[in-house]
Image 1: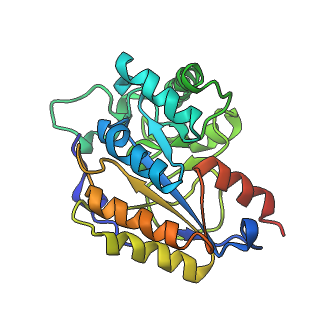
Image 2: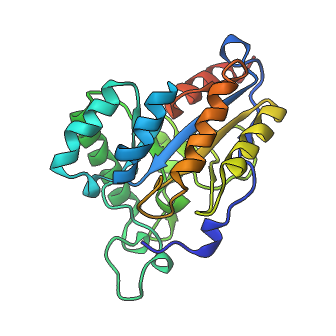
Image 3: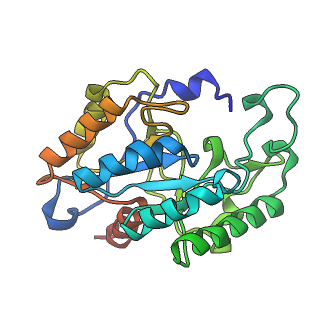
Amino acid sequence: MRIRPIFLAITLVATQAVAGSWPDGKRAAVVLTYDDTLVSQLDTAIPALDAAGFKGTFFLIGSRVTPEQIARWRSAAAEGHELGNHTIRHACPQANYPPAKKIDTSETYDVDTMLAEIRTMNTMLTAIDGKPQHSYATPCGQHLAGGVDYLPALRTSGLAPYTRAADPAERPFDPMDVPAHFFPSNATGADLIAAVREAERKGGMIVLGFHGVGGDYLAVSAQAHAQLLAYLKAHAGTLWVAPFSTVMGYAASHQAH
């Protein structure tokens, strides 16, 4: 999959301030999310998370889940990692793909087709993890189907309680359009940690987005990822690290306080 260079070079910090303290008086909330059902997530990211005592959120693409992987994803969910919805076919704008590719582009979809695909992916996820509801991440960070914004329809559909975007711009708290901070492949551990430290300074939350970890594509190095986890573990007294839906549920229920 080809991603436009601008999408690879996101460097701003994605934070949203939520009034009141985080659980146990923590200074900030950190969410670790991983997109696209990549083997390096199973082989590298999940073992690293487990070793550090953290749980991440993995937004799966249905067409990329192989029969051999199902038991591994089911095991990850049973151990506390969250499985999220990233659609069946990950339809992105034509500009993200080679000119000859027409199928699986968001221009060929309409709103009803996109919502039907999200509903089908929810069913697949429930078959894997047994949970009735799943959060959603927009493919390529956009929510257009045939040129029409499908996010309003998704809001009223009940198909997803929370939606993660893929841009880091700060904006008013909206559980259906949550900013996220992705990193270029040459990001260092210090780069990842700096983003978290900025969120901690502001006292909000930060959602970090990854694709490959030490392999696959759009990958950060396993070393940088490990350094981030080591920092989070060393600062467990002030940082709350939890899956996306867990943090969003807390934020949504406390935003009025």
